[in-house]
Image (tube, rainbow, N blue to C red):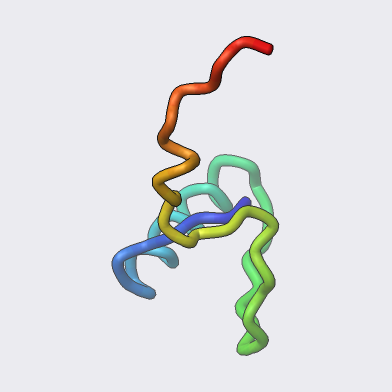
Length: 53
């Protein structure tokens, strides 16, 4: 899963809760991941309502 957190502590807290729920392991890496979904702000064109074709 991907997400944005306000701090490393918040991310680790979330990851630990998920790890416990699914009985999984947690690995921490120093290599940044490339997100599948952009976290860039939404452009004004993307806010515009879509017109029927």
